[in-house]
Image 1 (cartoon, rainbow, N blue to C red):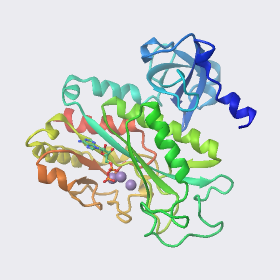
Image 2: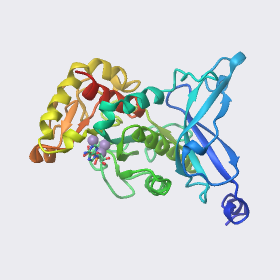
Image 3: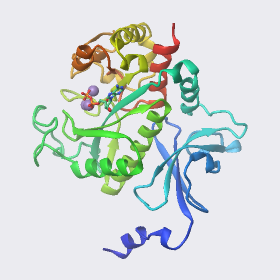
Length: 355
Ligand code: ADP
Ligand code: MN
Ligand code: MN
Ligand code: MN
């Protein structure tokens, strides 16, 4: 082991009570993740114990230079798989010094929706399937693809194994374990239809926690790909042509849907989603029109549809849910670059609060 990795792996807890907290927030583009670290006097158990902090919002596209301070409010903590020990990752959201959420803070409104008594009573569960593409750093072309060329057509790659089919597995597996270590409810991983593209799932997680966990999982993936010298892309259609895009299917259920006779409630909820199709599409990620073409296991962006076991629909109900008469459904519309705070809270708002 090099002296550098020995130093990186020094065990702080043998020598000091101090811990390192990595404060993480969503940057000005709404999809970039920023973070910085600070020392705290001792281990913490909940985000309420943590101090607020600030950063220079003029450097992240989130504040003007003459009034640049943005305030970070700690909202959720995870174990830090990189520093380990008592060190933590802190998911924060962003406020002006007067305590108003800044425009890119999508968490504040989501938290409001999830704390509405009618929503809280339904204990909404979310399972989010994050698809992503790994790119070669210098050329921004998918990992494993020949330079200036394409691999063989789609078919052998989905859940595939072998040196000619699966590219980037060490990154995927490192991320999987790091998320479990951190305390994220990561429920699985798989190789995708387009080679170099992978998926992880987070959930079922309750309410606002689904968004906190997905952002933490994205952060950990950015850090691992950074170490590996590979670029993470959340573009919904990274390669034009006969190549699958990347989505963020959002699986959803309420207490009523999970109980006896829940299928009736599922059908009512799906009908409500259909009525607000355009509003949802507008909030489901940038560039999603390049992905939702009606081909490559997607439905057209222009119309709402649903079906049992149908992967060409906007919303899919699983065979098990139909057979059991209760369960959950999958909103297949969200793009890989969606904001989970927006998508989860909007689904809850439409299906529970909208009459
Ligand atoms: P797909 O068959 O579409 O690829 P995945 O297995 O990738 O589905 O993801 C399904 C996700 O749904 C998982 O994260 C799982 O934890 C989640 N899930 C399971 N049951 C429920 C439920 N009742 N409500 C919401 N999400 C659920
Ligand atoms: Mn999946
Ligand atoms: Mn998938
Ligand atoms: Mn899916």
